[in-house]
Amino acid sequence: MLDKKKIKLQLFFILAVIILSVFLFKTKNNIITNSWPAKIFIKIQSPASAFFARFNKSFSILFNNESAQCDTEKIIENYLIIHNEKNKILIKENENLKATVNFLSDSGYLHGKKDNFISAYIISKDQVDQSIIIIDKGLKDGLRAGMPVIKDRGILIGKIIKADDFISYIILTTDNRSQFAVSINDEDEISGLACGNYNLTIKMDLIPIDKDIKKGDIAITSGSEKFVPHGLIVGKIVKVDKNDNDIFQSAELAPLSSMDNLNIITILKNE
Amino acid sequence: MNKKIKKIFINFLFFFMLFIAQLAIIANAAYPLNRLQLFLSLLSVMLLFNKNDNCIWAWWILFAVVLNSYSIYPIFVIPLILTITILISDFSFNNFFTNRSYYSLLAVCFIATIFYNIFLLWLKHILDNLYFQNMNFVFDVFLTDLLWQILLNSFIAIIFFAFFKRLKYAR
Image (cartoon, rainbow over all chains, first blue to last red; front, side, top):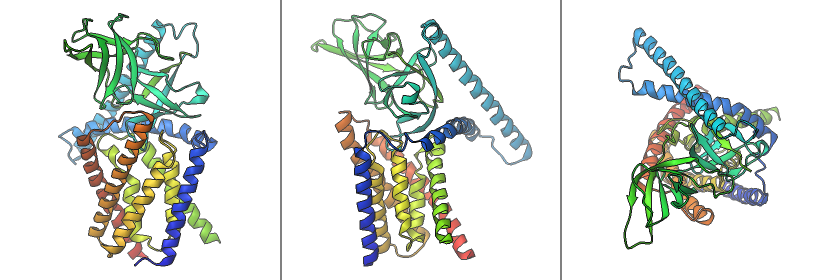
């Protein structure tokens, strides 16, 4: 049997939760993530998260290594493997950043149009839905909901769905809840709507039946959305669903870049 | 008075470290380690040890509010679900597994993880339909994630339980 005091206290806590939730739900801005302690926390967290992400990558490589034994030589060998993998990860990160810089330079983002892009660290994941990622830049850095997120040479990986003062939330292109206006092979006539397919692939619907599309064609953003420029690579067609009785056909796209182990990403600020 | 301030400080430090671990370390870990919900493991251990400390539940709710602020979902989601999870786990522990053993711990941890995930999925389903009109849900993935989470949570809970037990007997 529960005693009366405990029941009273539990009821008090439930009531406190309801009042607190209603109060915080009613306030327009997220007062916790927009506060100055949160800013300090994010400043500390972003390099820490980057460190842990790199550590996890190199650790998982060691974990998969079958020769993990306990003698000294093996420990040294494993240390060297970790060190080597850390270097490889840094080189890969560097290559990705170089590719992004090349893309930005070619697209005119670097010359003339200053402050039209921003790089950000991935600091965490949404605690309710782990498929949404959190970055360390927000409204104060000029980010807005709807801005596209890219990596490498202009490969679209998602868009911002919410921006707080110091952090932003990104939904990936493979997520069911993300939608993009796309065209195939840069032809304005072949355009459609791409949306995620259970965090695995991208589905493109509403393509007119008379348009000729085939496996291997590249889908790019059409540029008809606010903030999203024309020409960002969305994916490659891996399957075409065509039925002569329908008005539209659909296609399945595979992203050109892996969505796992993201560390640094770039956001385009086309206002 | 000093003892009270010391206790508040210790609680604050504990929940801050838990918050950092959950948000910065576990969230960035590789699969399936990122499925671990460290706070559910600790909650199960605390349910067995802190029976008379009612203040700790207020800290848990505050922790849930701060954790939920790093989410696009409304601020009441995690606090509400965590409150329900605490109530159900506490009720089941008081009525079905009254002794402080490893079996009780595993049962409480299992119940807490199952209820937390099911309620979270249910509330997320409602909110996704309200905000996005689309849901990112695959039953097989959910089930695999849940199994990994139960395994990892139970493993961590056993470690903490052994540590707390040793600490308690050492006193």
